[in-house]
Picture 1 (spheres, rainbow, N blue to C red):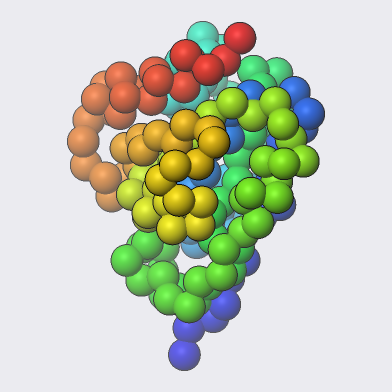
Picture 2 (cartoon, rainbow, N blue to C red; picture 1 turned 90 degrees about the vertical axis):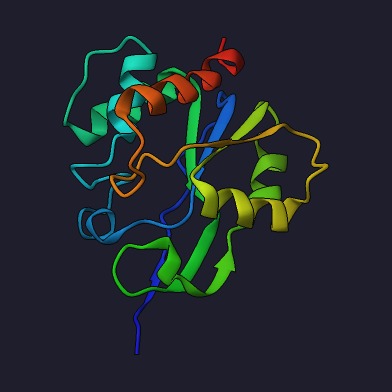
Length: 163
């Protein structure tokens, strides 16, 4: 039997302009209680490069940096059963209350999905004609094997929605 895992609380405040959604935290993230904690996940490197910020391993500094740039983080899945870290192994998932979160934080102008699983689940939850634009970005996971440069290029899209 697989263990039930739960996502983290959203990292968001009233200044947030974009919401980046993953599927659900992986094993390393759950161990460290940090978003995108796997050392091979390129999320933080991409974000820091795009924001022209000096990269840091310090998690509290990472969070302060994305908040400074009005970026919010959360996951589409609130809880699920999963063996390992693969999205393909997710079973019996329950969704986070994304729509309620967006109503509470009306300054969010766009939603970006980190990979196909979060995008597919979000469209199921909100529908294709949701009032905010929803974008699919390539997964920053090491399992998504396109180059770092290609990932970074596609992730540049977030900059269009940041002041």
